[in-house]
Image (tube, rainbow over all chains, first blue to last red; front, side, top):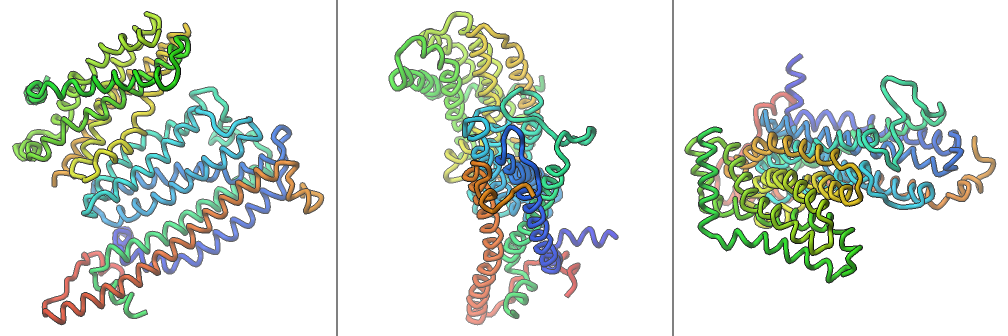
Length: 245
Length: 222
Length: 79
């Protein structure tokens, strides 16, 4: 049982395993997206106040949720790499960053475009939007810091420290809508209460969140594969793999 | 207090005292930057009083950002930091000492000079007092948080610019609460919440920064 | 279905611009990154082929043992 666990630390094993898994994840991404989009665009109701713009919910919320989820994953895997010196953990952490930055950017952009017809403004400096913007800066800072070092090991470790320090931003984003009364609406899905959302909307939203999650795993594995090839280029198995194809 | 810590702080302050002109630069920067705003935005006293809290806070933040370099770069380049670590001095004590020295030398003067700027910006006396208080609570946090970024970028070529990019997102909460506490005070609204959060941020940064900074320092020195 | 016709679907009750702008940006970005990450692995492989031929040429010129920088976890992946 522990062998399986230790295999996670082996770039070779992860590369092989993701090669096997990727077709499944890609198919799942496509299916979930198609179903989610159909449900969200065609089979969910309009909002009595916002009209059809509420359909932006089905891409804005998953993007925002993923932006936070990916950051936490990036910080945790960075921390694991830092404490236990496992390079595979650093590979995952570094690969998470560009994807997470894209999700954060999408959350901000879709939020801004959604805000124009509903709130009357593209942007407002309330706590949630501002802390999401800070999250984007943290992602960009992580990538900039990693690029600035010549030695990759040092780069990995420094970025891991930065990611962990920035982790404090995530609860701020999440709880900001409870702590401050502002323009952005509060949480509708909670672990303990019945959701206050229409069932058809909820179905579409959950489907889209799942689609985004599976997309993330797919793209992460693709990125991780590329990163492994580059980092492990001096090892025998990569040479065999590349020159035998 | 830990005697190692005390002697480290004494060392930092004596180093700064030797080059006293450098000690004045952040203050001069603060004064110059704040005076740019009436020239660039508006000299109208009512509007100046309105933008004053933000202007003072942003200028203070930038001054501290600039002052960070002086405490670490020279030590790092000359190998002093390495020697201290090799001698067994705890990294977190070093970061703590440098942050405190940074605040005493840069932050505290800012707190004392700010009311003059506030007066020039037509802020009323009460708001000016709250400005001093919020800076007093907030500038140490900036010194501590900044030291983390400084330790991360110690050996790098473009460290200065990167430092700004890394540290500003972490500064923003302090900035928001600092400026809004003064803003609330000048309107006459309750500002104790913002000050309380400033205090909490200070405690949090004092607790976290030495460890994060020490970890970062070990990475940069190795 | 909440739309009576395709025309209605595109217009989204007057908010078509905003809704389709959002969906467009999101789908474009996510698709682009999907293909970019696949492309990155492929171009890395091409670079590596060049790298290996250079290294082989160099080690044939000055014979020395090949640098193996794997670690013990390599064996866990099987052949």
